[in-house]
Image (cartoon, rainbow, N blue to C red; front, side, top):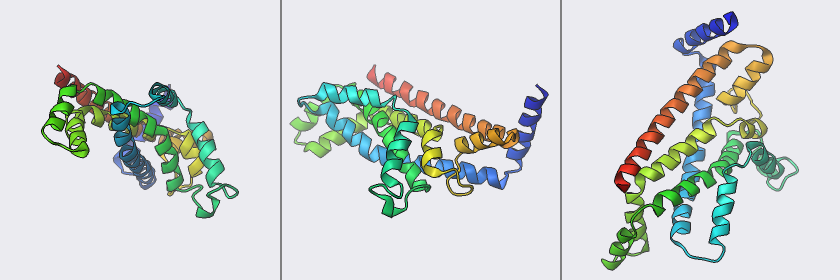
Length: 234
């Protein structure tokens, strides 16, 4: 127990002093997670809307596949992307391996199904009269989509927040595609794994506290927007 208490106390001292290495790791994590979530949102939100309001053969199969991909292990994604961007891979000439771009690619693949699935759920809860009224008043397909998405905004924001929380806490993709290079691709989770292997717990505990604080904030936002969605539905 003394080791734990000493590590926690030292970790708070490290946080209070704004240690440079700690800040670099946190900034790398926030950077790759932000851009991965942004790109996945640009793809996933329109994709979820189209699936929700389209009728086509195999729609149920698509929904089943999306729900299955929610449980896709990060190491599987890391292995898949690695096979494409490694030196002998199809995109090896782009030198993406062990860069932040590689991590972002893997994380986008991880959370696109999350955003699409939750967007479908959010849009499906909107009364169909909004869509029909917009079309009756002469709105085109894009204006109608904007009306529906605006009504489902809290549910969609909850989807984006949940996706961000998913990527900022993952370790497999960051380790396999980023290489855990200090100052470049070392994220909070990969740094914690490294410090544990070295037997150095202070930085690992400080990063753990930071990560848990971010996770708490993300969950607070998620529940806030989820509550707004439920109140709108009522």
